[in-house]
Length: 343
View (cartoon, rainbow, N blue to C red):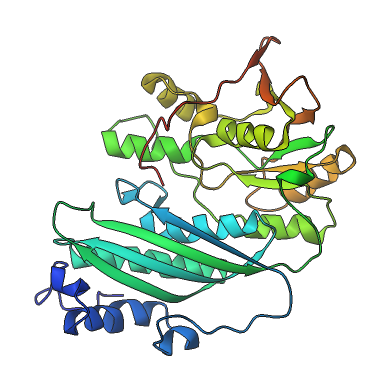
């Protein structure tokens, strides 16, 4: 597909594209609306009118400010769709509708925006969601970084299960769907021009199908959490503090690819604290752990699923991890984000 706005006429985003006039309308009508065409969007209202069944729904919002915009395994467009869908999936919801707000910098190449839009379109089609409403603003050159995207997502609950941190109990098992650290290292390597023997590809991908498989199999899911900013370590720390329980991880069961481990060592980073965009932990009662792992391994997003730890009452809310040589240490929580601008 070719960019529908003539490059010879408007090769860059202008401030006028955010002014609410002719160029704004042209941007919407010729670029955004055709890419995400559906009845709700075609209505042209400030918001989308959608009909939902009489049941529970989930609603989330997120913003994406990643640099660079394109990285091995993804880009800001697909990432904004998958990240929002994954937030809904962590609630146990089936994603249905998205919104997108674009903050564009004056001077952005129209071809770059078109590539991002096509990527979002393909991601929406892969997931089976509709982008039904949106907004565009333009800021002065030097006041942004090409593109920022804010999203919101709506999903429905097709079950009666209560899934959340308050459901976690001592004795629960912690499962993960694959290796960790790839997204953060893929973005960092691209940003800093780091060269490795093989290109590290981001794991950015939708997780809703994996979650739906678990729910349909009747697995008693106590909690779900995607491992984005702060990585695995940040996620379990947050859950430990929220629930007031002790989390115990086994390092030997946590997969870190050799190239990711090497990149982390060069940069002085802990893989457990590096962001992922296609990884989650599933917390289930001990009786369901083996069946849950089996269900996950049958899905393309969980072929390397395994148990990596458990929850205990403990002395206080904290995270412990056993090393490869059998010693146990407290896993510290990072005081700040070691890799900014990675989502």
